[in-house]
Each structure stands twice: as C-alpha cells, then as structure tokens.
View 1 (cartoon, rainbow, N blue to C red):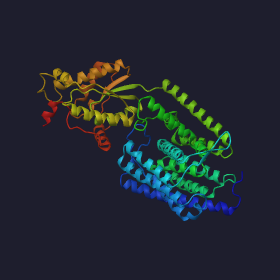
View 2: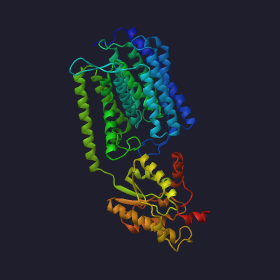
View 3: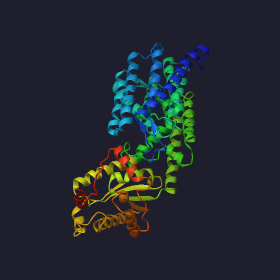
View 4: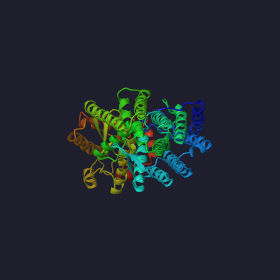
Length: 526
C-alpha cells in the first residue's frame, strides 16, 4: 500500500486543508459572536446537560462555510473523477438544507417530528443529485449489484443512521467534532492509496478535516461554542456521503463510527423496551455519560472515543472484506460487554426512586430537572382532582407530559374525580387562601401520593406545591413528614426556584396558569 510520494502531491492536499482550517477557525469566531448577539445559545436547563453556562450554538455553520468556500476554489479537481457537477450540487444542497433546519431548531427548539424533516430532505437532495450505490462487496467473493430503488433505500437508511448517530453523540465538548475530523482523515488516507486511488474524494475529505479541526479548537473542552443541530447532523451526513461516493466503502465508516452507532442502536432499543419514544425521551445513559459517571473528565472521555475511532478506522486500511467483518464483530462484542457491564453497575449503584406529586408543569420543571434529577430517579405523579374543570385538568396534564418526556421522567396519572374533591371540602368554600380548605386539599393529595409511593416501592415522595408563593411551605412540609418517614422535605422555592421555574416554563412554551386550580381560589382572585 503506497501513499503519495512527492512533495508536490502532498502540498496539493495540505494547502487546501490548511486554508479550510484557518477559514473555519476565523468563521467560528464570527459565528460565536453572532449567536451570542441573537441569543442562539444552549442553556444548561436539563439534567443530562453537563455545561454550566449558556453556550453559543450554530458552530456547524462555520464548518459548512469553510468547506464550501475552499471547495469552490479547487472545484476543477473535485469533478476530475467519477463525480460531476450535479452530484456535488446534490451533496451541497443537502448540506444547505441541514444548515437551514439546524438554524431554526437552534433558535426555536423544534419538536422531533419537525426536526426530522430536514434530514429527510437532505437525503432526497443527495439521491436526486445522482449519488447511488451500484454494488456492494460480497464477503464470499465478487459483488452484489443493487437495483436503483434498493440503492435509494440503502442510502436513506445509511445517511439517516449516520446523522442521528452524530446528533445523539453530541453531548461532550469536542466529541463529535473530534471524531468527525478523525473520520475524514481516515477516508482521506483510504482514498489516496494506490489500491483505492480517488484523488477527488481524498481532496474533499482533507478539506473537511481541515474545516472540522478549525472548529474543534473552539469546541474542545472547555467549549466556547457548540455545533448546534445543523452542525451535528452535517458531520454525520457528510461522512456518510463520503463513504458512499468513495466507492461504497461503508465498512470503513462503520469501523470509524462503530462504537457511537452501536451506542445509539442500544439507546433506541433500551428506550423502546421501556415504552418510550426514543427521539423524545432523554436520559444520561449514553456511553459518554457513563464514562463521565465513572469519574473520567470530559477530555478523558473524548480521548476514549478518539482512540476507538482511530484504531478501528485505520485498521480498515489494511483489512480485506472478511477482515473488516471480523473487526466489526469485535466492535460489537466490545459494545455488548459495555452494555452488560453498565447494566450490572445500574443495579449495584442505582439512584433512589423519588415520586413527586406534581401540581403543574411550571412548578416542577426547574427543580426536578436541574437539582433533584442529579440524585434521584424521578417519577411525576399527577393527582389533582381539585382542578375546577376537566379542560383545566387536561391542559395541565398535557404540559406535565411534555416535561416528563423532555427530561426522561416517569409519569403516573390519577383519574380526575372533581365530585369527590367537592365533597371533601364541602362547608369550607368561603375559606381564604391558606385556610382549612387548602389544608384538606393538601392532605388528601399528599396522602394519596404517600400511598402510591408505598404500593410502588418508591424510596421517597415529595410535592411541588411548595413552589407557589401563595402556599405556606413550612405547613406543607410538616404535613408531608407526618404522612411518612420517607417524605423528602424539599422546598421548591429554594435556589431562587420561583423565578427560575417561571423563566424555564416560558422558554419551554408550556402552559402557565394564573391561579391555584380550584374554583374557590379562582373566584377569590377575580
């Protein structure tokens, strides 16, 4: 296997890569300032997020622009092989779609059902540009030729898998950008060898490596900017495309991204087994989260991924088809061992289970996600027959469902029975706020919470009722402690809880009511 031998040939690749690096570094600085100016930042508002301060997004835009600008300057060399202008326009058009969709998601936090539109459109652009897989290597010898429809189906599945792998992997400073740079460098080496010589693809790969490394300088821990939605999707997309147009060398890309791909596959399966939507449910059980939980810092965690990507990726340069299959099998066994090991660790070191009586989403979201989730496995309990109408009950429940899904909390719902509640407080309708009616209401709902906690073997229970400035926190906490020794006396007003809860509720766009919930409280406020 011979690598380029002349200095002139090396410089033909080094100069574009260096230009992409410098341009990406400068553009990242500009994009960072613009993201800060327009408040397009990632706030540490979820338990699974590990950064401590708002961090600018849109970083992927710098990589995309640097890659595009340098590619334009070397355009004749990019169309000197099997790929023509239409092919590259399809690839570039798909990348542009991801940038547009990424901007909208970073700015407006789109729902998963809308987020997926842009990756699908990007895949469509690639296929319409004429990129196809005509054949794949048969491990038994020879090739397997694919019909056009099967090629389109395989490309769609492959690119979607690659994009969502880098999207879900993007949880530690420098992780996706570093793995992306390693992946593009491996593809460069693969396509510059005499056996697989494709100078046009090699040039595109080394430009991508330079552009990614220019951003990586800003993104490595402690990160000054994040890739954002568009950037995390773009790196998976472009690596997937390069793997296809370099002659269908998907096995090499699988070796590079093997551990992240298997991690994502296990994450999806694990969430489905729990009855959760894998794209709406979030948790801290990705491999990078696990490594952090074991005591590794962010730099050490990404180094593990870098070593795995480089080791298995470079092995693909020297292995034939059967050897690559063996390497993939080893990767699978490594991931299986990790899954078994961490499952055992979960059982040994599980967090105590906490049941939170949840009066409404705004009251519970901040403290549960930012404070309590670090020490407890949380389940929300919606038990609120005091609400004055089924419509109000459903509106609040919908918001609670959203919060539970967003932060990966469990959710139990008690059926609405307002008549029973009215019978409970009969004779106390004219009581003022914080009076006997409220005492009866609190005791009823907290007693039910204590009962459910006992029946379902929760370690602790508590209530979000203490957040309200109209409620006596001390009285509520004393009531809870009287109902069980496993009551967690946490005051949701702590840590500036009221203002932070309202701010988070506004940011999430969830329903915020203006009264306690019962008709008597509402009348008094009117």
